[in-house]
Length: 433
Image 1 (cartoon, rainbow, N blue to C red):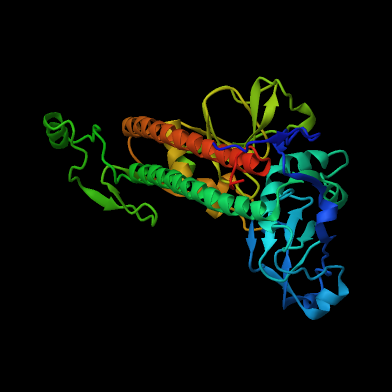
Image 2: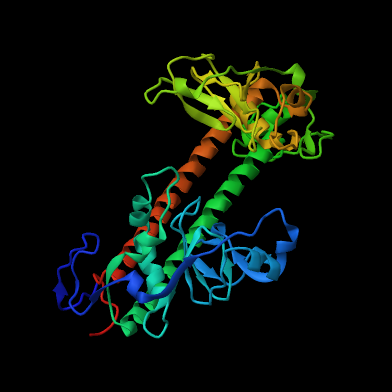
C-alpha cells in the first residue's frame, strides 16, 4: 500500500493522522444547502401517481438513484413540505430501518422527511467522495443518534461533522479509485452469493428427490431381486423399480411400495402454551419456540423429548423445526408427535411448504386441522431412517461449504470497508503528489 510522504496529527480520533496538505473543514461550510423532504397525505390519491420522483428512505441502499417507486402529482408536491432536489444531491437516511444508508440523486427528485439532502458545489467538491466519506462514518453517525426513543441522526449532527479533506482533484481521483475497487469487490461478492444460492437450491432439490422417491439410495426396498442386484453392485443408485402415480401434483410418481395417506392418521398435533415476554431469561436453560423459531429462553419446559414444531401464526407460519431436547413451545406454535422418523418427517413437511395452506389474512394462520388434512406418500420406517441419515449427511456437507463461502464474503466486506477508510483518511495514497 502506497502512503503519502508527509502527515499531520489531527484532533479527530477516528481519522488519526492525515496527509499534511489536507485541510480541516466542516460540512455546513461545504454544502450549498441541506434540507429534508416531506410526505403528502397518504390517503389523498390525487397526490400520487404523478410525474415528480419521490424518494423514500427504503430506496436508499448505498446506491445511485435514477428513478423512484412512487411519484407525486403537482398538487401533492405543492401541498406538502417536500422540496425538489437537483441531480448530484447526496441523501442520508436519518431514521427508520435504513438509518445511515446513502443515495446520490442522478435525476431531480423530492424525498420524504426521513431523508437529509446535502448539495455540494460540484465545482469545488466531489459528491461521490463525500458519499464514501459518509459511508465510512456511518457507524459513528448511528451511534450519535441514540439517546431518545427511536434512533435519529439529526441534520444538525450531519452539518456539524468536522473532517480533513483533500483538494478537489484528489477527491475526484479517490472517488474514481473507490468506484472501480468497490465494483470489483462487489462483483466477487455477487459471484459468491450466487454460489450460496446454487448450493441451497441443490440442497432443496436433493431433499425433494429423496422425499418423493426420485433419488434411489442403497436401501432395502423389500424386493429380493433388487437386493440381489444391489449386493452385486453396491454403488448403484438408480434401479428401475415399479412406480405409481401419487395423485399429488408436487410429488408425482413414487415407488410402488410407498403408501399414500392423510397426515391425520400418522401424526398428532397440539398447540403450545402461552409464555409472557417477562418470563424470558438471558441465561434460561430451555429454548422457547414461537411462530418463527426460537424467541428466547426460559427455566421451564413443556416438551422433554423429540418433536416437530410448526409455526402457527405470522407471515412465516408453517415453518418447521426439529427439536430433540427439552424446550418450551409457545401458543404461537404447534407440537407434532408421530411414530414415524422425526427427521424424515421434518424434511417432508418442510418440502410441503405448509405456509401455502395458511389463511390469507392480515395475520396469516395455520391450523392443525388443515395440516392433518394434507395427503402425503410415506416409505416404510426403515427407508425413512436411511433417507433421513443420507439427507443429514448431505445437508451437513452443504452447510460446511456454505460456511466457507460466507466467511469469504465477510472477509471481502471487511476488506471493502477498510479500503474506503484508508482512502478517505489518507492512509492509502491514490494520487501522485
